[in-house]
Image 1 (cartoon, one colour):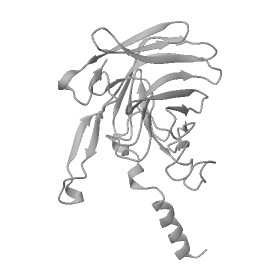
Image 2 (cartoon, one colour; image 1 turned 180 degrees about the horizontal axis):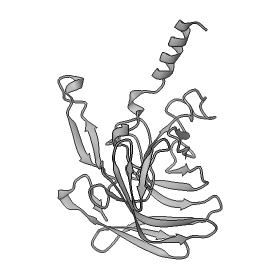
Image 3 (cartoon, helix red, strand yellow; image 1 turned 90 degrees about the horizontal axis):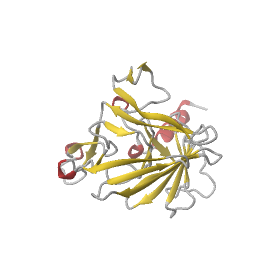
Image 4 (cartoon, helix red, strand yellow; image 1 turned 45 degrees about the vertical axis):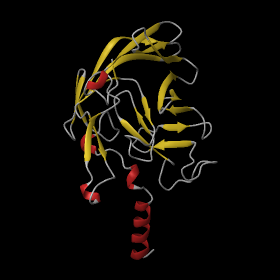
Length: 259
């Protein structure tokens, strides 16, 4: 193979990954990444790459829920709590489009703080990419792609933007599965065998269950108390726990619920 053909193939493969699906810059990446190096000391850790501080504070005990499945509620903090939003119109030139920085909407316990439960963020809106993003319990944001590797063929039945199965490519080996394109449920399969189920609710996708391959797990439901505050109920068939999120009011328009 001559040099010209080699350069053509490299250029072609680079073009296969559109810029709109680029992952968050490493300088602001929250959570843990497979390729990262960290300094651990108790509940806190520091990324030796970008100096970002993360905290994981246990809330109560670790609860067994049958078989080998267990879970523990935690508060998770990351020192880069901002999302950026680039306005495409109106702006004189692409380089002059205004950029707005807002507190991350997933931070539901104050600026930089969140209840460490997984989240699923669809494309569109504040997520200015064409990709689905899974936020793990440690706050890491994992982008899903159509195939595990750029050179892989689509899964049977998938084509273009019509994808029932998607994969992360950051070493986390997560798999996104949707029964049909119109299905209101999506499952995220973790490499350890755990499965997280999300259900569509308006424009959001809410976590409804975390379980292992044998059905041991905890269900999560969402309701409201007498004051109109959002209440999450965690039920593992052995115990029930409730988490209340107060309406933050107009002072925090991008963080409507704060625990």
